[in-house]
Image (cartoon, rainbow, N blue to C red; front, side, top):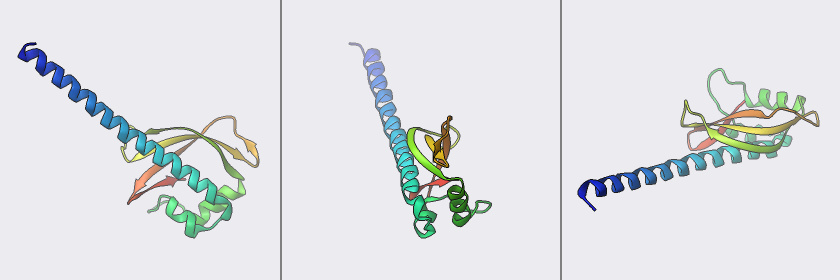
Length: 127
């Protein structure tokens, strides 16, 4: 095998390994975001913002935990199942989670999209 062939083989292996690394990072972000959505909806019935607050995106212009929880509970929002999650192509620290949800005990026909963002050391829902 000539030098040129070896360089191409080494380059191809490098690209393949880089792709594996990206896939692993992408899948770990998606898994973390899915878990964040599940944890939030498991804790939602309690209405306890001491627990729920750290699971929500915070900042200027974002409704308070109390407002968010009141609204979700008034609409009887519940998680049925997480369908999939994909890293947002515009922001590597955000994941869009597609899920089946219920409102007032009736499952919505269309999936609901949740944006989950990395804030500090954790993943939080933007609702």
